[in-house]
Image (cartoon, rainbow, N blue to C red; front, side, top):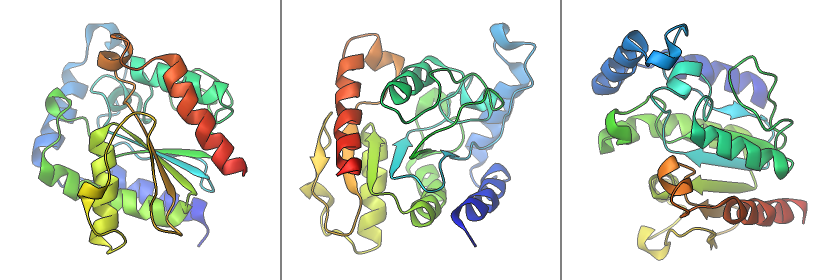
Length: 230
């Protein structure tokens, strides 16, 4: 089975998932009540699968769908300010064919990149519980094994910790404490594991306060592209 076919099967499994009662209740309530600005929308209201190139050299791992972003549109990092920031940056760096991500049918395509999430359902207050993260990680593991990227970009510490936890559970690294999260860091993982790059999550809390700037994020993507082209 080729990677594209395997990812299509995985997408069906993810969309049908109801493992976490708290998340199921919240995502469906948000989809039913809606936000005033999106009353005309039919919300997705289900788990959100990964998106991108099945043969990507770069796998980007985020946190979770936004309640009125991906939980509305059905595509990761689509329909909110975080996605606006991310896809503009990916377009400038050559990883996307356009800077705009508004919905599943907007024509957006990723080039040599695939975007996933630690949690596939929008969590209340954007804070998933540890067991919810554990429930979701097997989906990411399947994406990782299917795509076999050369680089992983963790957006934020939760994504960073989740990826390292997968490696530790597989016996591929010894101590989580040997690796520290920080914007622009590059972790030396044992070969042949993908290189791990890190960045602050492009949340409004980070981008509107200046903790994460366009230049800071562009610098990380530039380093990743240089690595992939080497």
